[in-house]
Length: 451
Image (tube, rainbow, N blue to C red):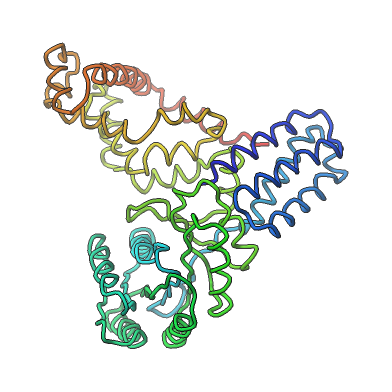
């Protein structure tokens, strides 16, 4: 997400970064490029105008002009204005109510509403330790009810099933009553969508809202549709008074116009981003972290939080103990590290959060993809346990057998063994006190300022 916008903004702002002094001309030129970048990212015109005017006003202020590094001061202003535009702070769900807390999900058909219901339930169950029940009131598409039942079962969520001949309001009330009796913390209601807004849909969702009195009414918007998503969110907000927005399919949206427009147009916060198809591919929306990613400064905090959630702590402790005792790092350990990276969302997801990755040529970033990592895992899986523990025994005939078994070439097996040898040397140094030096280096980097 934001790839195109990020690259354009970084190029234009980097010219200011090195400027010895700021003038009306170089500020104006940079802001024209910023304006074009935002418009190409499908950001709404009123939002672009307000954003550029705010940056221009602050960038021509006396404090910036007199600054020792005026170019960097302007970049900080752009960062701060992006944070303000995106919503300033993370808006958490309001679950501090008498259970069950009811969450009503609204949106058009095809926006990813049903899968988002399951993702949100999974997130609340795993991270907030809440008991969650989900229910579909889409009586027009029996397949939608079946889809919710199947997806919720895959992540261990309770699903209250209605019947196609029931009224949506009856289904929702029954689900809330059952949740009260079962002492469930949260009920998430999946509503029917349409291909476009119509009076029948709006009347139905207003009736549902009045019947269950939800503590959160969230609009699920497909980010790929850009300004259409923003306009639809505004229409729903006029009827329902939304409490927030969830943007889906952000992994397929290189522009990011919906994210940058929706808060300004609707006045409602973005609460979550859908980042993929897996049940855990839903992340809280942090405006400051998103602004940092847009300007190429990375999002290290999100990487750390994701690592804490997905890393197998027992395996990590065993590996650390193994290294400190001087025992070798073998291919079993290497495979575990690759699988842990996959659990963290894959290499592509991590790269876009690393500082400075926007400046890396696209063809170079393209060489680091999740398919390559899967091929590495397949090669290691084709080895015998002895070969994984003692890679030095892997010679010509063994390499050919491993290549055949993994559907790869001998050259790829050789490349993996070379990469493993490099990793092995690094882990050996880490086991001799290198971990401490690495952590000290990381802390020094984290304490450095981005501007």
